Length: 385
Ligand SMILES: Cc1cc2nc3c(=O)[nH]c(=O)nc-3n(C[C@H](O)[C@H](O)[C@H](O)COP(=O)(O)OP(=O)(O)OC[C@H]3O[C@@H](n4cnc5c(N)ncnc54)[C@H](O)[C@@H]3O)c2cc1C
Image 1 (tube, rainbow, N blue to C red):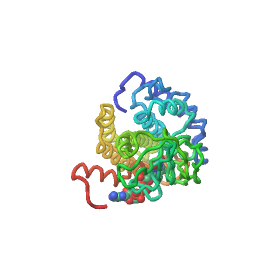
Image 2 (image 1 turned 90 degrees about the vertical axis):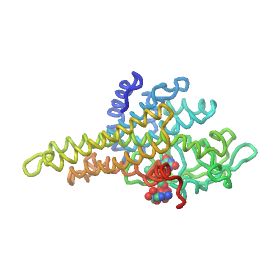
Image 3 (image 1 turned 120 degrees about the vertical axis):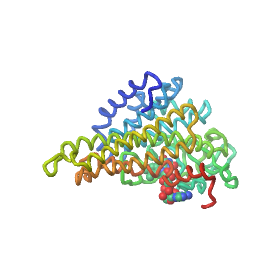
Image 4 (image 1 turned 180 degrees about the vertical axis):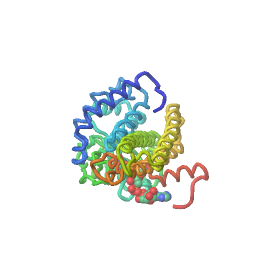
């Protein structure tokens, strides 16, 4: 993790570590089976001061450095709770900053203290069945009414979607205006016209719920608009670097956790009369993993420092997300290999690290889209579709 920016870093790290060991580890298996985490977990996280780490104190937070939120993501992932890490990333590292950066004072007052206490759970809904990488193809529509807005459409793959009380929804407000025709809305999920589909069955991150959401003649008050009408894409671009930093923090934590498990295993497991860790292949594989994590961490820390100065741009975020998520999949695959057949069983947590890693190159922008973003910074926009 980057150099502590204030004295609170070790204190928070200790709180996070202990919270996970005491409140999460004993139950995580059951939550994975259930496909969701209990609401009470969010309240416990709030009580422990872990949901409003960098939120101003006046809004119920601790006013600490944003890098501590990344440290929380890293620690959750290091302990092997990839589903919780994604759910936490959405709530505390994405939705809360959107509200803080773009919301009005009334928005912040209404939602942020309750999100910091874990009473309100947040989600963000951009993806649709026909619009993932190509977000501009979204069909969800918000039209003006006399008293506000009317929302119709649906969203897919929404993390925390089954439990969310508040969803930031991206919708087209002016279909003829292209990129300037998209706006963000704060949707209270108790409103009539909001519904959720069955939980989506995934191959990993089972404790994190992923939902399909439907909006059917959902009436929103004027103040549900987040920021300016038509500026939705600009806000997404502004907030994406932090989302991708969070994914990178998850990658770093997971790689550290997987490496630690593997080191323990290869010291114990024997084949051909010696510890597996004595084979040159094992030693070189683990040396390679260590070297990759350290290289990845160096770039991550550079990005954290840039973000703090308001200088981390979209290309930095794309390079970071591309490299660390791909590295995570590669290194954890190499670690699992050293477990032999045991690595393929649910009994050994390395298998969960492996399954949880896979989505990291997909969500928050796929690796291919990251490469497009980077290429655009080199060659300009391509004419190819
Ligand atoms: C577990 C999980 C949680 C998620 N959570 C959320 C959430 O909370 N909120 C939310 O809004 N979304 C969420 N998503 C959605 C996620 O962001 C999308 O799945 C992702 O952006 C990719 O979109 P898609 O699935 O429609 O794939 P597609 O866009 O259909 O892509 C299919 C393939 O085509 C490639 N491709 C597409 N365009 C190009 C191009 N121009 N050049 C080269 N290759 C291209 C892609 O890289 C990919 O390999 C989540 C997804 C998952 C699986």
